[in-house]
Structure formats: C-alpha cells, structure tokens
Image 1 (cartoon, helix red, strand yellow):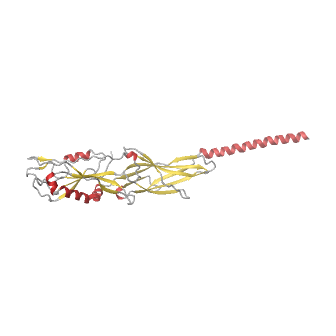
Image 2: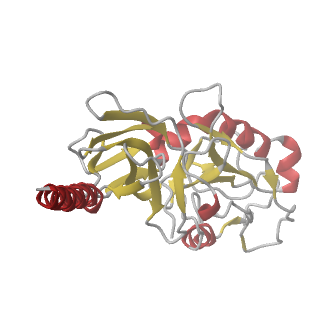
Image 3: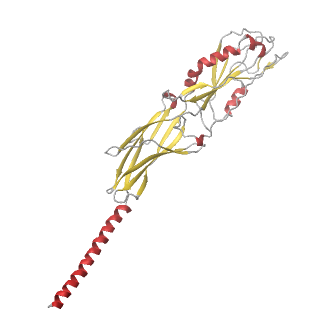
Amino acid sequence: MKRIILLFIILLGIFSCHDNQIDKELEDAIKSTKTMGSPGSCTLGIGSLSDCSLSFDIGNGNDFTVYANAVPSDGFRIYSFSVRMISLGSDGGEWTINHVFDFDSNGDYSEEFNMYRGGKYKLIGVVSFQNIEDENEIKEVETDEVILRVDYPDRDTVEEWVKYDMDDVWDTSISIGNQNERREFGFLIYMTNDPGYPGILIEKGETLQGDTNDCPTDGELTYNLNFTFTEYALSDIDPTQEGAKYVVGIFHTHPPLTQCDSNVKRKDGVGPSIPDKSFINTMDPYVPAFVYDYSEDIKGGHSADAEAKIYPYGPDRRKDF
C-alpha cells in the first residue's frame, strides 16, 4: 500500500513539473509574440492629418503645421516622437526637429513650425514605442514621408520691402557729387527674421559703390558694379533655425550722364544692360534683380531729375541650383 501511494506522489510530482514547464513555455511564447509583431503604427500629415504634401510662399507666412496619430499595439506605449527633415535640393542636408511632442489620449498630435528658408523637403515621423513589461525594449517605427515645398518671396514682395531704400540710393546716384563721378550704387537684399517679429523680414544689405568713370571724348559708355557675397553652406543650417540670412535679390543704379558731352550715350540704352543680364543668369543662387534707371533713353547733358523707374529682371523669385 505504501508503495502505491509513493508511486502516485512521484507521478503527480512529475506531471506537476511538466505542467509548470508547459505554462512557462506558453507564457514565453506569448511574450515572444508581443515583441515579434509591430509595436504600433503612426501616420504623419502636413497641413492636415490626411494631406501628404504642402506648398506655400514664405513671403506670405512662414508657418506650417505637422499632424500625427500614433497607435501602440497591446503591451506597448508611446515613448518618444521626432520629425526628420531631409532636403531634396542639391545642397543636401538632414535635420531632426526637436520640439515638445505630446500626444493626447487618442494618440493625436499637432504642432506648428516656422520655416526661415525656401526649398523642397521630405519629412518623416519617427515614433518610439516602449514595452510596458520590459521598459528596456524600445522599438522605432517610421511613418510614410510627406513633402514640403517652401518658395522664397516673389519679386514684387521683395521690391515692396526695400522700395524706400532703392529710392534713397537712387537719390544718391543722381546727386550733384555723383554727376561728376558717374559711379553705380547698389546693395544685396536679404531675407532674415527677428525673434520679436512674427514671420520673415526682407532688408537691404550694405550699400556698395563702383569705381568712378570719366566721360569718354566720344562713343558709348558702359558701367558695371560687381556683387560678391558668401552665404551659409545650406546643408549646415536647419531651415527652422532663426537668425540666418539668405540673399533674395540684388539692386543697383545706373548713373546720370549730366556732365558728359552730348555724343555720350548708354551702350545698351536704359534698363538692365547686357552685362547685367549675363551676370544675374550666372548667379547661384539665382535671384531677382532690380536696376534703377531713367524711363527713356538719355545722352550726355540730360537733366539728372528726368523721370526714372525701377526695372526688374532675372527670375520671379530665388531659385537654388
């Protein structure tokens, strides 16, 4: 009798251990299933959650909104979120936008960003999901890409911002002192921003001046003012970064011929000269250009106060090659 009871206890212990092993294997399998599958999903939108592209003119407003919705799988929670911005231009560059990314209880998120540079960009959301039972297990999921195109301010907007500066420099150009020197004046036009001002600013750079020119005894006369500048390496500057400056136009004047003999005239007439057009067509970046000149053809001895106007030429807005 004792042997039978002892055998029963031994068998019961064996089956009990076997059942425990099965339970542990089943539990491990369940855990494995949780970690092997996707930890969640995320959708990214621009302008709205359902939009995958957005274009706007930075001169009319420089803000845009990113939307996202994240859904963690069972056993996971949202741990972090970031947006990668990748330039699709020849300048290259990739940045991670680090802002406060808070999802609400429904997994929805939206945040407004400001752009301070034009260009075409690809945006990808990256969400990290954390395993609730094992906090050391964190998995990243990338969203589908969305496309953002930001145009620089158009030529009319650029001129509107610096029109008074152009008028002032023109007055200097036709002053009595310059009637004898016959030199060109000009400046670069920059787009920048002020932390205390919403949006972007367009402003003139330093006033430049060309060399003085003598009136020739006869024949035609050509003037030129050369612009040189060094801009940031665009791949180094986060497009959402404040404080950077970008060239969005150039301006110069054509001087009067008031003190010249009547046989002196402009080689290419009034408005942008052939050298002016050639120069702007080789600029990188390719930007709008403006020249202040007389409204009608002039020759030596004309009135310095004759009617004048601003002639635009070049592209309608900045384009990066």
